[in-house]
Image (cartoon, rainbow, N blue to C red; front, side, top):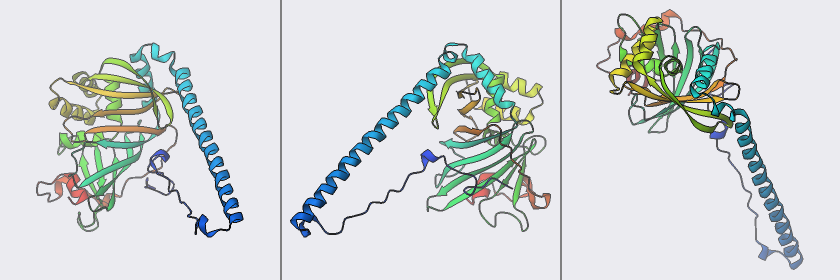
Length: 334
């Protein structure tokens, strides 16, 4: 079983989906009615208009009550936490999030350079096991012609698997491309791209290399009050911890970031929700072409029974005739 757009898995959250409102047009006009009918017709319209105004007023009032409730909830949740130690608050939330097994989240990319300008990345959705490093994700994107495609990719501790969104990109009988994240044949830029498409990289950086943590304020993320923090990460420190911990893929990704960051630091925004988990995390991944990566967590308890593709359907990236094209170009036919 695999995560799929639609079906049981909702791709976009409800607040992003516009509602289609149909309006009925009254056939004929008041001038076609008799005097009595006209009076009745106008009176009915007046009553409907009055009722509509009351409904709108009630809706505004309800929305105001909801907004006030959210603010009060935020104050109740963070009135004490925001005045405490920001570093302790963020560390606790990151550690609590990393301790879960399956986390589900939505992914957003801003100002990315993985794909050409003719492709617009609409977003993604994933399930990721923080304890084993296994993950199952998809990205949806749209071409300039209006056609939509879905790119599936899986994470394993030492390799990245990707299923091209176009047919004919691989030899007959093959459906997946395998790229090593560590060891011989691994490419550091691709490792940074792959690791940057999962939240573990940013969470590890915040856990391992926080140099300064400041509270930004209360923010509502997908209708949930959260406390926003800005974390300045020392990449050299984070890389050192990753190396000592034997996290070679993460260490290589941070090394790529360091090479592209003269200051040696990167800013990560962290939103902590009421239960004390990371509700959202966002940052650039320098040197990767990903631009700004955002992860919105949807669940911390829902397991996912995904399985990887059979070995017979997998072809190594280094065995393909690439003609200078990147993995992403092959996968999208661009």
